[in-house]
Length: 358
Image (cartoon, rainbow, N blue to C red; front, side):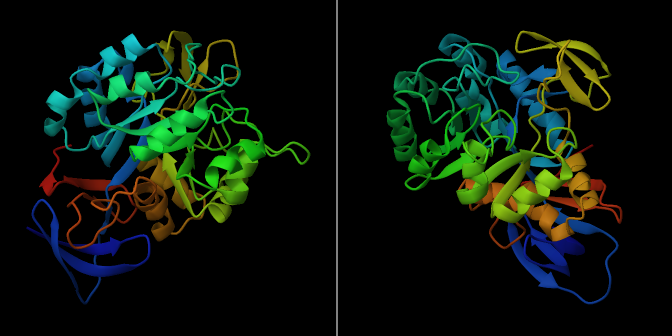
């Protein structure tokens, strides 16, 4: 197959023609102007749900929420658990290995907890656990675990971090009250990212720096929610300037795509209103309802160039994941890309070379 357009990668843009099957076979530069843009499919490494479905409800829901986000341009997604006991997490992920080949946009599971600080839960349920390698080993028998969010200050976490490192599973610091040095000690030795930067982490106090200070000063990789509620534009711009491979995530929950109203999330009563979700009666944000296509437009409104927006929504996440098969439009990569109109709205979605019906 062939398709023409203004191709935008993280490092260049040009008018070109893509020749592809399941993978990109060739790219040719062409003369003249093109009306449409072609960008890499979005990569979302932190997503709890959407369209009424939640990861923790089990494989059927994981499949449905992944379809929902695919229709918003996410061609690579890491469905994300929340903090729960082993039996419930095991039940939620059971069936992954048997069914995964049918869902080409699912790239693995992100475990957000349970090895997090019970005093920095955010909207997570109070089901934290002490570091336990058996918990991870049991889950790895039924699902492809790609990312684990944990708190580096927990007693015994060193063995977990070393185990994950040996298994080439990506480690992120989040839901943490760690001090600066507790982060740096691991960052000097391991491949470390940060979970929803600025949110649910110790800060940048000038006398007692914490997780945020470590990320902004020494971090190479970090995810950030840019829905215009979780992080202010100036704070986003600081992170963009200081963290080389900053990437956006949705942190979307099941009520994304549903009408405003009251719902349940992780056992808590929540209220969806005015483009955000909060725990009812509190000012605590409970995930987000944003999608990656909306995030892309938000980035452009924040004065990011189209190339920067591509970096933040696809390329940088693939670099953190150490993934060479997607994240940019180049020969031999998966044919995962989006056709956008002149206003950067999605016209067509291609996953492994096949156009997805919207």
